[in-house]
Amino acid sequence: MQGIVVDRGVARLTDDLRLREPGLHEVVVRIMAAGLCDSDLKLYRGTTPAPMPVVMGHEGAGVVETVGRAVTRARPGDHVVIHTLRYCGTCRACRADRPTSCGAVPPAIAAPFRVGDRAVQQFAHTSVFVEQTIVHEQQVVVVDPHVPHRHAALMSCALLHGTGAVLRRARVATGDTVAVLGSGALAMAVMQAARIAGASQIVAVDNAGRGGDDGLVPGGFDHAFVCDGSESMVTAAVELLGVGGQCVIVAFPGAGPRADF
Image (cartoon, rainbow, N blue to C red; front, side):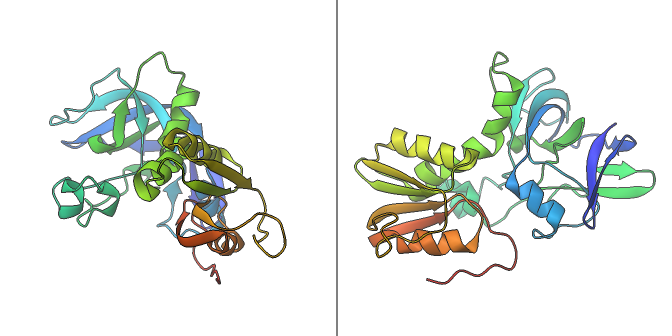
């Protein structure tokens, strides 16, 4: 099958990828649509370290083809959204409904792909720049088959990530003020979620200027969300906060950058 494999800064389309059979709790999904996320570009550029070679992509949707014998969350033919999160379901954080803080994350699926005799790794527990991928059943959410795959794919990362940052991590409340640094798909998801949460003011900032003394944006925000993965945006976001405000870094700047504030 075809897929995009990156190895030491070189990405290439290959047509001889092979995928192993699913384990007890694993699901094979035929990818129908995939989005290109900044995290994929960081992988390609080497700013996000990962075992190589690796199949790219982590924002995707598709149709379940086969399932392991113990799978209960999906069945062949289901339309699904894939997400990257894996969690144990039994630790203290999971029991408190905080799976992103899971202290016993199950091990990643080791090298589910092969090219010839060479093992190929999986990116972000997903790898969706490929015709078929394999994930744990925790990572698929069944959706209405009438939802277009290209729309469902956005729920895999951009919408899920941005909405979760507002409603689950920051817990924006009615009347709160929100600054959103960035203007891409992730930032749009944050802004929509902030509106749903009842924020009284939502301000989008599409550059790294600082608030307050230069007159770009007034400070004093309850929440600032960094949706542009750069250290200057992190600095600007913190400086836009009021007393007791919180900054949520939604877009990771990658390995190496440092922010001063």
